[in-house]
Image 1 (spheres, helix red, strand yellow):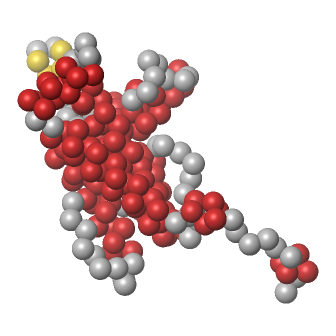
Image 2 (image 1 turned 90 degrees about the horizontal axis):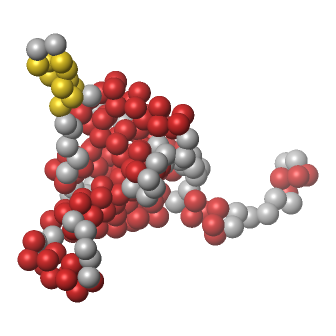
Length: 195
């Protein structure tokens, strides 16, 4: 044993938590539950709550934005849980779920789902919080990803971009792939996750 190794300080509780897969998993599942509530709130209850808080905007837009933020965070955190298991270290300090999906070694997704990962990345970095991206370079990177995976429909000489929806069902499928992968990494797990 080298002399330096003998005097190494033990890891702090924070160092341990930074690479604890079940910590990331618990946070991911909390965000998943919040996304579910936000996407399934009944109109009558939403009207009541809007009145109570004195909100003057469109609550449908606000709830959709909040749903997408929580869904994006849930995907980011489940991917980081997978990386903790695989690498036995803290995951990269990034919100780029598009890149994290690949780093985690998950199966290739359809173009629609890759588009959704690109959208989630954009939500986490800026559109879920700010009026504009921090840099034009970041916007360009996002746009390149969108163009790579978007579908177009020709109408005469024009090409119309077909929308790629990100709702509960689409999120649930992406999250479910990652969650099943997480549980399959540990042969001793109960494998009882239900997406």
